[in-house]
Length: 73
Image (cartoon, one colour):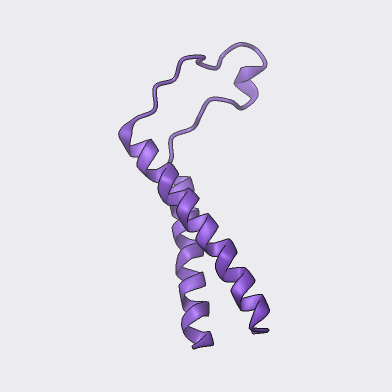
C-alpha cells in the first residue's frame, strides 16, 4: 500500500515538473523592469490546460505528502 502511494507521488512530481516546464513564459521577468513586458497577454488554450494540470497535480502532491507523513513512511 505504501509503495503504491510512493509511486503515485513520484508520478505526480513528474507531472508537476513537466506541466510547468511546458508553459509559455509569462514575461514578468527582468524585462518588466524596463517596460519590455506585454501588459495584455492573451493566454492560449494550451496554457490554460497546462496551468490547471499543474494546479491539480500540485495540490494532489501536497495532500498525498500529508497522508504519507501521517502513515509515517
